[in-house]
Image: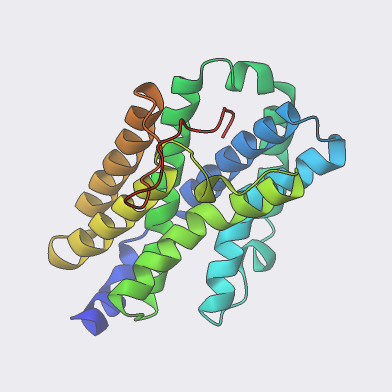
Length: 222
């Protein structure tokens, strides 16, 4: 079944323009957060590139491919434009954390589908496709967090971001295999954004191991 999926999924991918747009918006969000952490101009733009493109580049390297962000000239300029906009509008972008969480959840949901689908295109095992979907959505943000002197969001009390990515990756891969690509995209984005948004609004802390004391999520921006 996986081999058949790999052969037929070429026409079942998000279009290039949408892929670029999602990564540019993710770069915008990354730049806004970096700007709120007092990063200088070039540090802010570098954070935008890391957040927007870092996960996809790592995914491509793990698949043994030339990173599409390097081979296609469109990606870097688009993310830099997003980064400039995010830096200039950071106050408005981060003004209401619930709105930020919803936009971020939608973008992360699409990134999970982009990463997992590309992994399926190259006939990777199901679990590997899930992991690569999560990597695509999170790795650039982890690098930018470290660069700006913060512990990686996915590794701290951060309103179910990791849980949202895992849930989105699981439902995308399973639904894409058994039902189809577009239903999988829709459900994955809904699951990811709903978990991200609800956990922010309701102030749910990240799941903890049994016996560990409960604590409130780290302060935004995340």
